[in-house]
Length: 196
Image 1: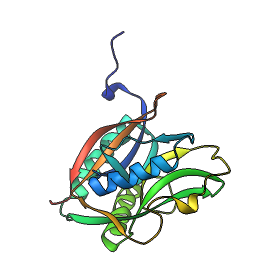
Image 2 (image 1 turned 180 degrees about the vertical axis):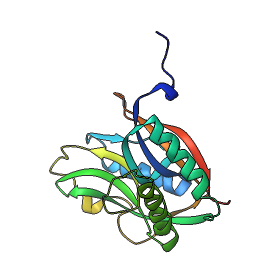
Image 3 (image 1 turned 45 degrees about the vertical axis):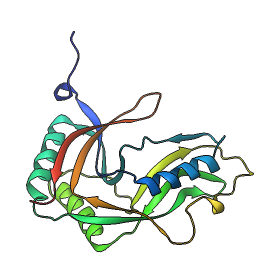
């Protein structure tokens, strides 16, 4: 049998996101975070690009994936481009047992509207994305078994309220997530521009 292409895959893990390309300041903060957590069992994400998840679909059939591509292409035209502000680092989970290290994004009106628009168009089409509350962020790393001596209250970039980076949102990407031993690989299935 030959290699199976994407069109032949029965189901795939998918999500909808927009990309963030870290600038020099953002890279510096990420480097400081990595240095602070050096020696901890963190699986750092690849930086080029980082992404902000707007809707996680999970296991998706090829038929549903095709429908998502069509919906994004049709319904996001004319939404309009905008910028997001990345501000401060933090973590999900308890301080002694964090799960994710992140950089937070200001939940401004345009970003929240985009999130709601995407969820609504999916639900109207009978596709149910993950229903967790939307907490816009960029995942920097995933961690297990943090040592007791590490204090996440002192995580670089977590205080002061300084803007780490402003990033444009010009297009939305429908991604397929492929899991392997080195961590997930994100393969774009479709890109939808917001400028109409």
